Image (cartoon, rainbow, N blue to C red; front, side, top):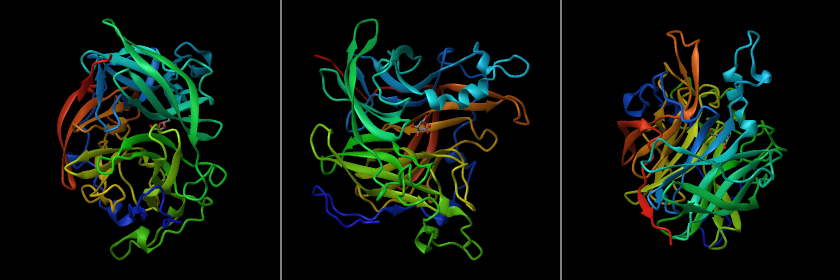
Amino acid sequence: MKTTTEKFGVTPHQPSLWTRADALKVRADDPTTTQPLVSADFPVLNNDVFIWDTMPLRDLDGNVTSVDGWSVIFTLTADRHPNDPAYLDEDGNYDILRDWNDRHGRAKMYYWFSRTGKNWEFGGRVMAEGVSPTAREWAGTPILLNDRGEVDLYYTAVTPGATIVKVRGRVVTTEHGVSMVGFEKVKPLFEADGKMYQTEAQNAFWGFRDPWPFRDPKDGKLYMLFEGNVAGERGSHKVGEAEIGDVPPGYEDVGNSRFQTACVGIAVARDADGDDWEMLPPLLTAVGVNDQTERPHFVFQDGKYYLFTISHTFTYADGVTGPDGVYGFVADSLFGPYVPLNGSGLVLGNPSSQPFQTYSHYVMPNGLVTSFIDSVPTDATGTQIRVGGTEAPTVGMKIKGQQTFVVAEYDYGYIPPMLDVTLK
Ligand code: FRU
């Protein structure tokens, strides 16, 4: 991979590596990095829709922002089909699990609002049908740009292809609620290039999505994180000494781990508005370790860069494993080197007794971590489950140097604002 070209005054960098040795340190069920058990009698935000990835409205510095006292979140959302013959099982009962598993194919961006940072009220779709150019509206970030209420929604337009796009609109408030206006013209920004970031032609299971724009607190420039895989034909990647790391005798065999090639991508804006972007080499790669580092995002704290990303058990490579949850890395400067938090990278995982209870964790700068409920077992053997598609309890976490600690649990979907903007 070419990492030496200097672009837009950005210092050339080598990607940091999440190694197999780091991942061998992952310990599921460590109480300081495990999400408290989610009870099977959780409340459901809305019985007509499933929601999953949750994207709080924020500013470019990462602060979760309310407008005129209204908190706003965007969610990936799909209709539930309890009465659709296509989702009945052999006994004529609603097969909610199949409906839930199919949701990605019909994901749309919706918004919700609240006076209290919880008990979210239904807003509706952000873009009208037909505005977004592809079948799927996948995750991204809504950015409040100014006190006129202008919002840039960055998201992923998927199927066909996977393109990072943005659409501009405006948030409007009244005493009674919030509406989104505009969001009518979607602008494509960039796609995987096949040189730094893997394309669909190189790997049918490629990932390229989840834009997270931000202003670097140190150099003040506009950048964007995203999820990718390292470029190259599927199966061609090498898991060498660097990717393996310092392992004990007997741990050198990498099996088929060359198929796992996740990375956290970064791009820099050429303009102040973020309409023109240049991809840079990945910040972090996980070749031989894991195939997905999804929804990457930062917390800037104590002059450090805390990089968080979500990942799954099923996307780990041969010989390494860990729970579904959020993983983290820390560096003193934007381009690294990044060191795994807690030694292993694991920051907040599901308990092994409820491995799918939550996912898509988003760490906010106040240490609160929001996620959604996937499924929770309803019997001791774990064969019966209750599907979520709703907000999970928020977890409170302390970030200290290279360590993190679970310290609190809050209400379902609690996402309090860090600052309020009065609209003009
Ligand atoms: C995370 C995720 C994102 C993607 C979306 C698709 O839960 O896989 O990476 O944008 O869900 O539904």
